[in-house]
Image (cartoon, rainbow, N blue to C red; front, side, top):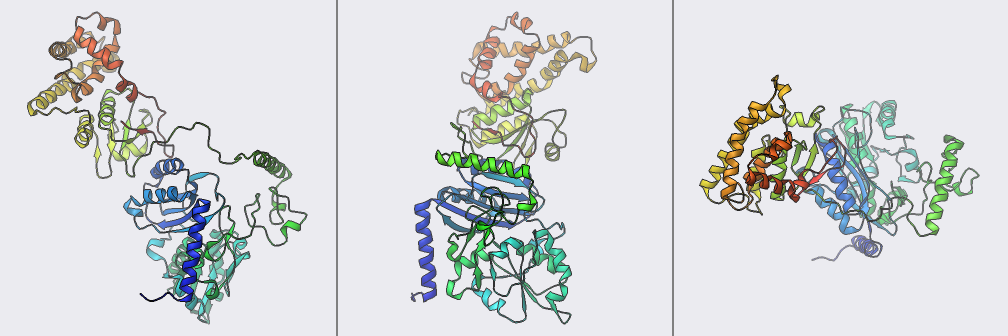
Length: 555
């Protein structure tokens, strides 16, 4: 194997130093993004936030229909756990990220936000996945931008360009990325020579703005458009300082403020008011007040806002003096978070519905974790109706199918996993159990509904239907005199499938039910109603709404 070149050797040494920093500091920062169609991006927020919080990872993740954009930080093993979690999903299996290390925590909180765009340009018809310009790798970037026919454009905001950029780059002097399309339209003479299209090279911090800006330029008829793959950060990571055409530092959106070659943290400080890097000479300016204002933002905040910032700074100093964490501290005795795997089943349920109870009992017995979404029957969420237009619960949404019947949900779960042996091994016993459920869901449920809700069916009372329903209960009582449970001496799926309906019947007129001579049935029902399994499946939850934290339902 040939010896590495001097430049390669220096890069390897730099990467070794970075790794040693990681081992001593423990704070790994990972930046990543990907443009990919995510029609279900809203559903992804709760499990992703829960996973990050469980691993004490902090930072910001943006989710939109067009993809994901993020910078997160924490212990190396925890950050890699989040990356591995994302890559379980096929749409993120090739997700690439950039790593750097620091001695202090880059972020104090973990946020997952839903956005219209993962980088805001304000144009809905731009598709980087289909129209982005030509990628140029960091090691080839110098050759491109030194070509006299190339126009080099920095797509970042003015305060970012101020502390560092590539030599010869044009600064559009924009305050936000959404201003770039207007600047490009006004600057056609600048980016075209003699009315002819030129080669346009775009760059940004991590590559995301470049993909969108080059896609925009291509939509405007420019066909020779290039951008720096991996952005400035990848260039600073891979290109040796003595070969670099980068001048200054690169602003980053975390507590490091800026980084240089090898992604080593720079010396820039952040204004805690406007969150921009402090301009040169700011510390000597009368307009600078730590935690309150800087020359850049002094005229843009009211005295009330400044006083609020002063109080925030005072609280921070008090916490710092006591060696306490003021921002982002975890509450004491926080319960451990139960995590769901990627693409976990989603169960739409209603707490009191016996069919939904049946489904929850089956899922709980199987031990298959799922996300529980409690449904308000008078205000059914559109996500339920999209999955199952009939809109009745329970509904189990799987990655490859939707199951809309309670018995099918129960059988799906138990056939996947049956640790409590709820499924009988003898085919004839299983067949007999299915016949009993058919009676329960047929004639018994028909009469139960009319006994419990006579007004709904426009009848005077439901007593005749109560008497008709008793035929089924007498049959169950006889079975329970023979065995401890409905089909043998072990609680099985049949007991779980029938018990919610018997319970509903008994609760309609509890005193009348107590007077009946079905002693075996009544004891069986008492055992069910006092059981831990019923208590667990009857936990109360608020109706589900899009974006709320997941409710994990697990055995």
